[in-house]
Amino acid sequence: MSLDNIRIVLVRPRGSANVGAAARAIKNMGLRHLVLVRPAPISTFWAKAMAVHADDVLEGVRIEDTLAEAVADCGLVVGTTCRGGPYRAATTAPRIAAPRIVATATANPVAIVFGPEDQGLNNDDLKACHQLLTIPTSDAYASLNLAQAVMVCCYELFLAAQQEVESASERPENVAQPALASAARLDLMFARMRAAFLSIGFLLRDNPDHIMFAFRRIFGRAQLEERDVRIFLGLARQIEWFGRGGWKTMARQPAWQDPEASVGSKREASV
Image 1 (spheres, helix red, strand yellow):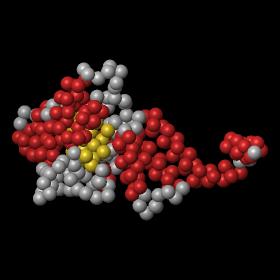
Image 2 (cartoon, helix red, strand yellow):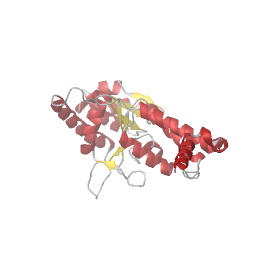
Image 3 (cartoon, rainbow, N blue to C red):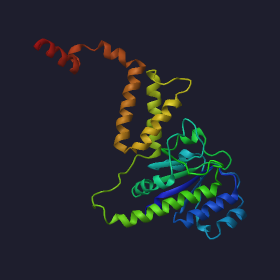
Image 4 (cartoon, helix red, strand yellow):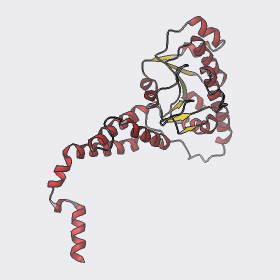
């Protein structure tokens, strides 16, 4: 089942009771994998008290030092936010996003990421996310308890997974989800693109992340495969070579060595 490929990631969680309640929500909705990133000290008593019969989820918890490590092998990383801002504008409701997340999870590890109870994910955390979810709420009070947010998202994933099972028999056998490039490979690609764009002055040196967030959003929607990443890595390498002085080499290159120049001269001669 595709839910086995989905992990819930809690970044810097502060409440032991919330961790336990999140574990319970995960098990209620048919998921199994919980990852904690730099959690505050966990009280085993309160975590187990709130987990009730989800002790197996707590016992299987993985703890990582960074969000990048927690999602490195994932083909899709979906962050959650209730705040606005220039880097949080392109969000989707869980009900709309869940079918695509579940479909992607049939062939790729997927992470759903939640921030700490008091502030949520910060901008550095968002860099690791390919897409963003926002749970619709009343304007009067938009902030949800962490475990509640986990439950809502897991519930939508559970419903989407049921629909996926029901519709699987109706799809042609040769239609399958592609294997996507891992988050670690995408991070490498974005780092190389950043260096390349800086070398040609495309990014402002005092705030290069402003435009890079836009590229992360674009490529997050595209869901790149490994061969796509290799192409963009090659493009970034060539741009950086050009920006760091390669243009001088190209300027010294005789016109007869440039295929485009040769074509142009032949056309002019024929006219």
